[in-house]
Image: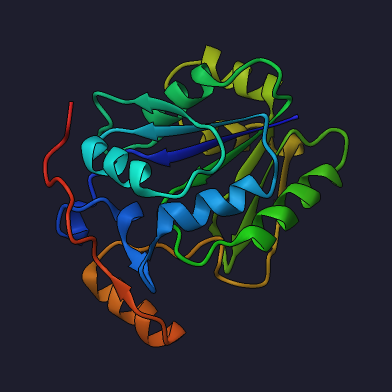
Length: 216
């Protein structure tokens, strides 16, 4: 069974201090688009980890159409690394999940077909491989998929990031090439947002509301 963790705790400081997952494309937020794609995977549980902009994101969630049930987790100290948020998300995941999918809430091009392909690729991996992620032009992307027992091993170790820790066990890592930038393209600055709008021909916009300080 599949458990999904979506990380949405970032401050979005380079984007002007807004919740990047609330950026809209044609009037729909990135978070709403992503959750709809996740819903098609029929996960046993979806965990959404919040930190900065918790209040703004919760408000947006209440305004979305009913979708899959979610477990909301708040990270009081998100920092600059996603590791602490990932730890909280994994700790909140119920034990019935034997496969874990890790996602970022602000990847603009990632769609349901991309997630389905990532999951299928993980299912077709070698038996010795316990974690996988896509890589395009040498850049690693998301989603990361891993066995739940490997996630528990990572939780039990020191504070190394998941990917560097996994690369210390190269025989257990499956890296695959998606052939596009859907898994690696990110939104960091207003310039990258403008470039995405130009490249896609779609109307992308910053959220109209959003806390610019961390909500605790």
